[in-house]
Image (cartoon, rainbow, N blue to C red; front, side, top):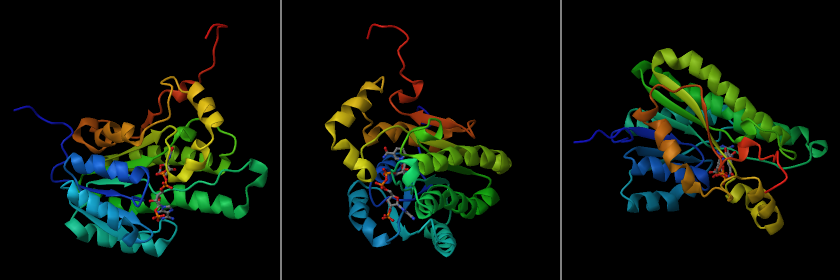
Length: 262
Ligand SMILES: NC(=O)c1ccc[n+]([C@@H]2O[C@H](COP(=O)([O-])OP(=O)(O)OC[C@H]3O[C@@H](n4cnc5c(N)ncnc54)[C@H](OP(=O)(O)O)[C@@H]3O)[C@@H](O)[C@H]2O)c1
């Protein structure tokens, strides 16, 4: 019988921000690999339809309320999540937000909203969940980054700061928690159409502009991330920590021609 490096049977995975968007794709992929799921939204009831879909797929899941911008919400969530199945093996820090604006127009409140949600939140969620992982000597933490973790983009200053920060945070946590058997990595998607950015994809000129910059010549489809999330959650990535895995169709190669031909 062959050994399946990617099998997550018997494992419990938390995916934050799974009421829509990429969090649902991550949940399906981890569930199909065998994990039981704990999914979250600021209103757990907003996951009801998705819970039904998971159940129809034969995936066991529970939904909990979590607002990553609120300290008390994080601690209440962490206790409820540990109690849900008695342990947590995998944490996907996916909940996030974005506000696209030229840098001169960014307000104090915009900055706080983005950094509190995308950087402070994932840190304190990881800290709360990793306590028990450390006691059990095993954990996989996957922080969702972005191509803005490594590249600069106009219109995304606070978002880029939060995603660059998540990469640095990941390296520091990997160093801190490696001794407890916990790996911490970043999965960094390129440009994927979701609720958060659908307005941009309605502009065909912008989509053509984007495609021109992607060597694989198309924006990502959310299930393009399935293999990477299961890899980082599984035995297959056991000797990898503190790293960033970019799944971006190649956009971060830079795509600047050094010859006149196309
Ligand atoms: N789409 C892309 O192309 C792309 C590329 C790179 C990285 N990312 C990152 O991937 C993650 C998911 O993106 P997405 O496009 O799927 O976004 P999305 O469709 O807007 O979904 C965001 C999720 O985060 C949750 N959320 C938002 N604020 C929250 C808060 N304060 N506390 C707890 N949960 C909160 C939302 O749940 P509720 O509103 O129900 O609470 C929702 O489930 C984000 O971190 C994003 O930055 C996306």
